[in-house]
Amino acid sequence: MGSFTIEFRLLPGFFDGTSMLFACTGFASGKKSGIEIVLRGRRVVARLYRVFRDSTGRRIDVMLNRGRALDEGQWSHYSLSFDRISGKIVSRLNGEEQEVAYVTIDGAPFNGVFEPTMPCEDLPIAVIGKNYTGILDEFRISYRHADDLKKETDIAIKNYRQPDAIGREPVNREGVLTSPVYAFPLTGTRVIEFGWEELLNRNSHVWTEFRISDDLFDRNDQSLKWYRIDNHQRNIYLKKAGDLYLRGKYYQWRMHFVPSPDGTTAPVVRDVALHYQLDRPPKAPLFVETTGTGDAKVRLRWKKNVEHDIFGYRVYYGIRPGKYDGVISTVGGSRITNASAGRGNYVEVELTNNVIAENYPGDAGVLTYPLLKNNVLYFFAVSAYDSYRPDTRYNHESEFSKEVTARPLAGSEINN
Image (cartoon, rainbow, N blue to C red; front, top):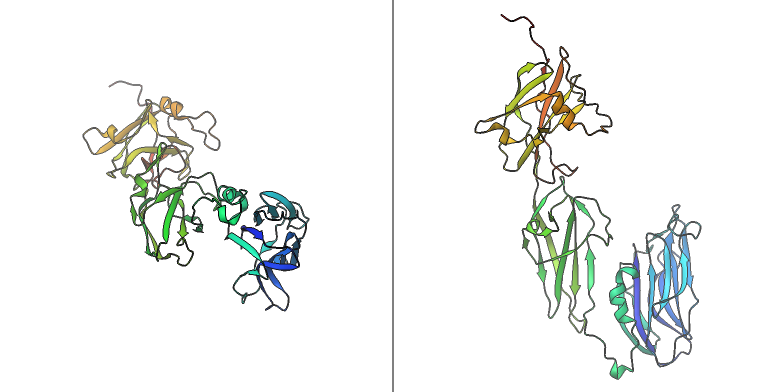
């Protein structure tokens, strides 16, 4: 179990004695375990037997027995809600908090929240309305905290008139199945198709939402937008969200199951399937070679990459083999790209200290970007990168090319 909310509206016929509004308890462990919500006199109380356990496995009971008395002849809305993050469990009547407890090590929020679990494997089917006289309506169990249900809960807590003139808004209460956050191997992954097999029993309905991001997000994150999709939705990655397309590394889906208006049938879904295409990094550049040296300068060339989304190249250099102290990605203010090859098949660049200066970020951290000095042996490798979110950590860059060496030389001072 995680966060959960149990809520309903009630209009009691009378208040004598004790009646069971909701119960799901069992005794397989030898002790009473589970949840009860009881109407005792005029007050609704909640009893959670051995539902929470600490890190040692010790189970505790939580009793929420205080609350405002119900008004005779009036509809009331009751909810019991638990937040798995803070450990807060709260009972509300008509949207107002009645009693709050924190199921944590020391009773303070967020500090060692106890795990909510049902210890019995043979709990009976939930019992609703045992020994109760009156009306129960809009009963719902959701694996979400009350704050996440606020929009629908606001509908439920309205003040209603007599049962013959309720005047409520037409709505099918739906169940929601939310997937974990899954991960693709690479950023920028394209979702080609998302679909499922469904059996829509009489007057039932299913609708689905999807979201994706290059940044890891929490399952219950409310800031990342959901997008409604159809069954066997194709080319989700072509949808533009601001300046970016719906591509990413982390994704999640959720399905809304809407029963028939009379509550007798519900939809069935199986074989949820997602087809995707990875945006793989370019291949490492080939045939890298030194084509010339001069006074504090080196010329390099390599065969241009032919991937359709190739965006540019980076030249790594240093004074030790395999250890690079600087990165060159622009020459004369322009990226090193296939355009540098002109009509030929080889990209060629000339590295000078002016080029090194324009690429030096000022605060290079572990990279020193050493200047080229004559008679010093330098080591070079080249990488290629694609067009997906260039100059960010989400971009796809190839492995290094084969390493080459070059030694800048001033040349002879004697003319022939």
